[in-house]
Length: 174
Picture 1 (cartoon, rainbow, N blue to C red):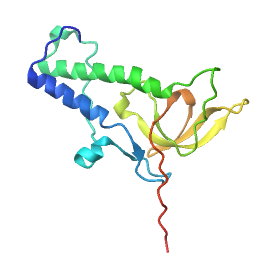
Picture 2 (cartoon, one colour; picture 1 turned 90 degrees about the vertical axis):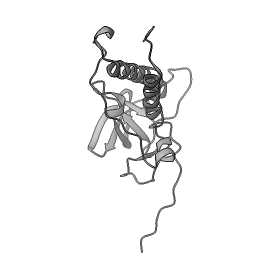
Picture 3 (cartoon, helix red, strand yellow; picture 1 turned 60 degrees about the vertical axis):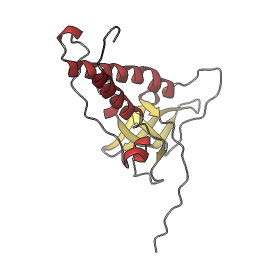
């Protein structure tokens, strides 16, 4: 936001909201069930559950002089989200070209469905249900199962999450 000055309370509020965003990133799936789309986040350790926030209206087109102090803080948070989406999530999605062979995405992997119309906090979380390789054997299209249904997406619209896939013991049903 350039030369924008925030007082202590405003700065603290913006940092707390950014902290909630960062602490909402998945660490590991909560279970090995393919029907479970919940992931363990740092928020689970902090407050016992995920940290979710309600997104405010987009203020990126509003001139800074017309914003209230609260809206200014929300604008800074939205700018953070844009950078997070462009830098961090793009880094997760990187696929090196011809230089090195990378592993194909596997069935059961936890992913985000990228939607350019929505902020990242509202992207659907799902698991890869099936993969469709191209003629060269590399996965080009995947079917993702979410709590809202199944979606077929090209690999460029799917962001694999850097979670540790820990094999959990399966419960015996007698």
